[in-house]
Length: 205
Image 1: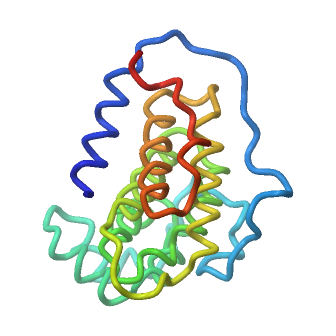
Image 2 (image 1 turned 30 degrees about the vertical axis):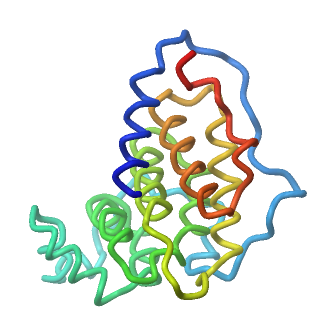
């Protein structure tokens, strides 16, 4: 399923040949889901810091140094050790630590817990940071549904609303909107959002 979703994202990107539009769709209003008690909820309006923390202890932590390398096993080890909560907290360090955390989050067993915090950060982010957050959300949303009970249905619903909002925000680059569309569709497959609400203007004619 994950492979199909990622291929779908690539197809949507390839189909985006129309000219830029100027209208902007607002993020979910008061009628949307209420913030969940997911890890990182205190940073509900904060994107990834633009300036990396040079005093972060994680920069000297061998686990983080290894996870920032090329071996995916090191990122898996970090995800296993810290889980979604520890990785979401690390996003506030910015820079390389935040990028490593985002790449490790989809590997965490409880990655679903990060969907709410990531959605709030996505709504406040821009540029490369937004792209990295959307890629993480898509990777988490595209994971096969397990037999266990959902860890944070409110956070997943919040992520669905955020993805629909970003997918319809025509001021964003097409590649970011396409990632949001694909993430929303992945969540729709799990009955978290109504697929009829997902914008279709990026689809091929």
